[in-house]
Amino acid sequence: MNPFSTIPYWKEFLNLTTQSLLVVCAWMFILWLIHLPLKNAAIVDAGWAIGITLCAGFYALNGSGAFSRRWLLAIMVLVWGGRLALHLLLNRVIGHPEEGRYVELRRKWAPNIELKFLLFFEMQAISCVVLALPFLLACLNFDAEFNLFDKLAMITWLIGVSGVTIADMQLNRFKQMPANQGQVCREGLWAWSRHPNYFFEWLVWLSYGLYALTSPWGFLGMISPALMLHFVLNVTGIPPTEEQALRSKGDAYRKYQQEVSAFIPMPPKKAVEV
Image (cartoon, rainbow, N blue to C red; front, side):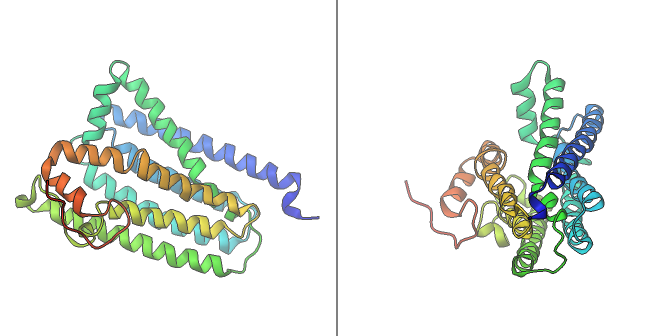
């Protein structure tokens, strides 16, 4: 009998999922309370990265899978999540006014803004647990030997983390120059993709799906990179970011849209003359 098809496996799966959801919901509630005096809802983005990391650590600590497999993944997520959370706190929260897209949400959600933001924060908690599915699957895998998919996942993770770090550094350097205020960044990776940070972040999520792929029911782990791709392309990633860029940069950004790929880095092309 396949040990992974037994009731104890699914019982552990459901128990860990429920417990991690309670942990992250509590974390997001605390974060919501912190955001009230700050009047800066962008803290939820850093909190989301920390919530993902909490899930990975919780599963590594409590999962019954191979020790090396559990904790290697936890370290990978900690490095990714810690870097992202710190980047967001330093560049969008601490000492910064509330980001434009959250200002727009406050305008749209009036009245009962704070209650709606509480629901928004808790929805982020749910998304953390759903997206952390590859972590749980990997932490229930008893196979301690790293296979081809594991090695491919690690290479993909390294490319993703390196790429997003470089993209963020290039954008931060551009923004720090007073002459560039209100201008469109076309430096480095930003000359090849309008959102290289999103692209390389998605590679990180693809690596998590690959890492879980040979675990029992590991194909379910690919739900996370598929969902993340949908969110980036159609929901919370590129659409609101570009709407805000068009509001703040106007025709310069429209020209950028014509010349540079939205997501996958590609050589730029000439804008179509109207």
